[in-house]
Image (tube, rainbow, N blue to C red; front, top):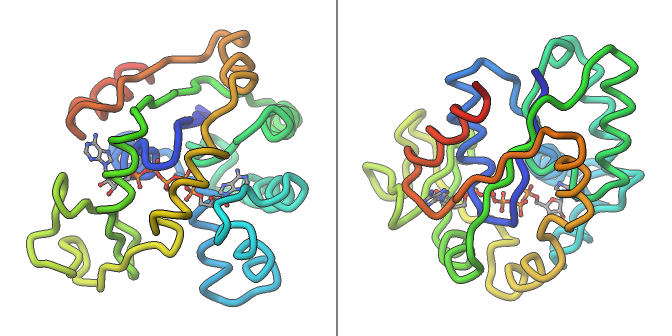
Length: 212
Ligand code: AP5
């Protein structure tokens, strides 16, 4: 089964992907995480991606698609995967469709998580992430038991550079899922829209129900 999670920055794609991966054993592929890993390791790809991420822009399609296609070519993604943060536009969606078709697969579900802007801003401003295992927290909605420490692995929690107010404003202006992308999956008959402004557990339940 191949699944895409769609939604604006801060909608809860990463949080829900972590939960669904546990429940379904689907491999979680996040292009944002892949870029951040490259930034951390100071690779050429990371240095290039950072110039876009710091401004709240999308990384160019040719760079992102190349990275994603290399990832889905690996053995662990052949039978299924859940994409978080990819695709962001129709060009990326078509590249993914073609790559999956070449190996006899297709997108089975596109799950669109909707949240209003004021709530997105509150979520991004209060997000904390484990530097070690990547588990996501929110200082008010989903806090760790001990401040600054990951419940799961004891790692240090940090805040993303692109969660600063000015970059968040740019991301919300430039990075909401375009109508053409939503229509791409609606036309394919695989789109389910989910109200993301409910509790974490309620959203997870709706997503799992949509996946059947
Ligand atoms: P990426 O990391 O994909 O960022 P994003 O799409 O902006 O999404 P976020 O990770 O910010 O939010 P999320 O929806 O995962 O929310 P989360 O679960 O963390 O991309 C980063 C950058 O990389 C991009 O800006 C771009 O430059 C580049 N990039 C990545 N993919 C690309 C692509 N395909 N093409 C081009 N460039 C690309 O939740 C947020 C907070 O809310 C957390 O604190 C969480 O605890 C809390 N929360 C979640 N759900 C709930 C809930 N139901 N109730 C209360 N709180 C909640």
